[in-house]
Length: 171
Image 1 (cartoon, rainbow, N blue to C red):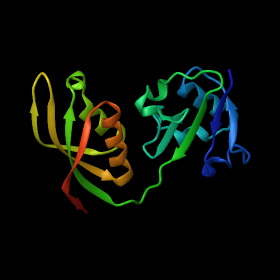
Image 2 (spheres, helix red, strand yellow; image 1 turned 60 degrees about the vertical axis):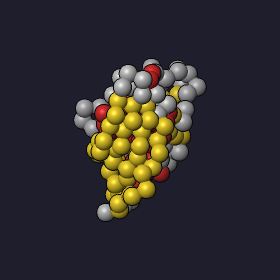
Image 3 (cartoon, one colour; image 1 turned 90 degrees about the vertical axis):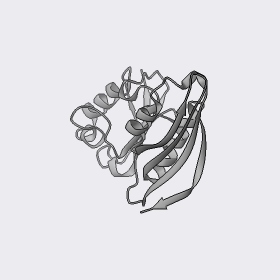
Image 4 (cartoon, rainbow, N blue to C red; image 1 turned 180 degrees about the horizontal axis):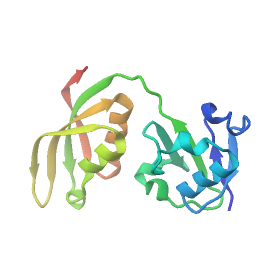
């Protein structure tokens, strides 16, 4: 099985300057382990000791963030492309407030927990009204601008309507 892996500039010293390499495996962590066999030291720059992708590294499988698939257990197949992208730090931390309108089919999913876990934001529920038919939540998200944007996209990808509350605070 042949998987293309796009290597970011800071890691190309480990791949002999190659911007793209071939690897194999049935899921993301197997591909990373195969990369390590061929390019010693690359795994420690991508993963923590527990094999989870480092907080400031983004991994995409065919342009989809693996955190929204099955993370390091995301299945890969012949011809797939994996992109390793280091997050750019240094943005301003913000607090932004939103109204979330949950449709009935996702009310029971732990979306607020998942967005905090997967998008590197702190969640603070400011008010909520939830019934069997709809959930309306006022939530505050705190984090880097890009992480808050990622959180909003995550909610929207789950069918949640996200409306900004205009009194945003920048720290």
